Length: 219
Image (tube, rainbow, N blue to C red; front, side, top):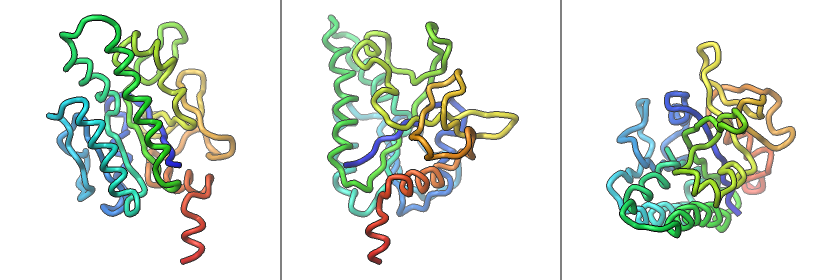
């Protein structure tokens, strides 16, 4: 089954820039909010700004299904906007049912990824907020009513990296230092802070789980 990985971080922390070392054939990006990547690249980007909320989810699912035999890495850039834009488009709807549905659509997407090929990894690039109860920076959603349904967004993922700028360097934090919700599988990364190179992260995750190893050995 496909694997979903969460990349948390503030705006400007280097989430999108971490894609800079991917080749065009290696990755497909779904851009919810931006018109272009923050670096010169020929990476394929599907722009989703002017779509209805239901169309966004469907395009993401069907594109991954269509290209999963050729492209093994997918990126949902600004994944929190899937929820924000849906909430905005449904602002005139009354009641609490819509919040259950907004959370449900995100959970359904995560579950759909698990039906994809075993060697597919999907990265969710997400903005953050400070949890007033714990003081930790965590993934932002479209509001407390949605958080009630999700628990925490991080709970949907086995691995969560946190993009930060430390001493002028853009890094990924691999496990929580008490201020973030970062977490990765035991022994996956040797260091607490690594370069924000998502291509390298992708290679490490694939080696850790043995994704694509059998195919490479046969070649």
